[in-house]
Length: 307
Ligand code: ZN
Image 1 (cartoon, rainbow, N blue to C red):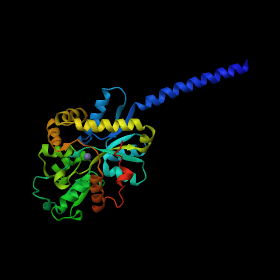
Image 2 (cartoon, helix red, strand yellow; image 1 turned 45 degrees about the vertical axis):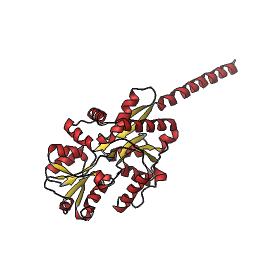
Image 3 (cartoon, rainbow, N blue to C red; image 1 turned 45 degrees about the horizontal axis):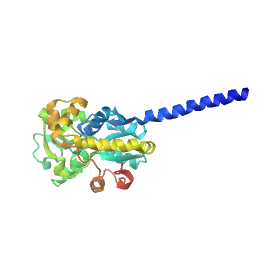
Image 4 (cartoon, rainbow, N blue to C red; image 1 turned 90 degrees about the horizontal axis):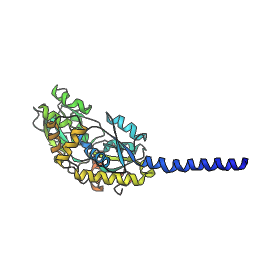
């Protein structure tokens, strides 16, 4: 009798085990957590989340952060499955041994060099103060390219790191003479009338890279099908983001005036978000040339274009 009871207990435990096996991985499969900052550079991610929300299956849980360092802490500690992030910051993490892969671009073009209204050319920036969000950014590279266009080097300006939201007001108060940062903060400076566009990114660096969609190695290894689906849906969402749709999404996710969004969305596009080896190598050349890193990760180690 005792033996029979034991058999029943084992059988019951096995059923509980099977039930939990069949439910919890399935539940986990349904949501992917992606970190972001509220910028127009992340609209393809927001559009992906919207598209998936209206369908069965995979969902994107968007996790908002207030700064790049906070977002990177979460990404590097696997508290999220991925992020829309400045690609140079992700490259730096990869270089430091963090298991992440860049699987798509965040956007194409979409950055501008903003200067105060009294600056007429790049040469006028000599001795002036210029703000970038982070040393590890395409904004730093674009500043270097701006200066190079006038035969100047980075040592001939004062470079300061500022939070993106502070840049338009810092320009208005003459604390800085120019800035380059993720949008819509360039457009905000133009809209406020405190600055003007000196260069668009495409004039300084054709096919420039800026943000990337990055996924953790853990997520890709544990949930390969979800990773594949997410990347395919993300690229499709980017291709579908015409100006009208982009504005609609931007209004929903960014607390910005219509005029600011209209200006900002003129500069950016979201189609063809593959990271090609050619454009990535053009980035790593600049990363080395302008001293962001001596040893950026190789394309084959860092980029997955096959998902
Ligand atoms: Zn960007």
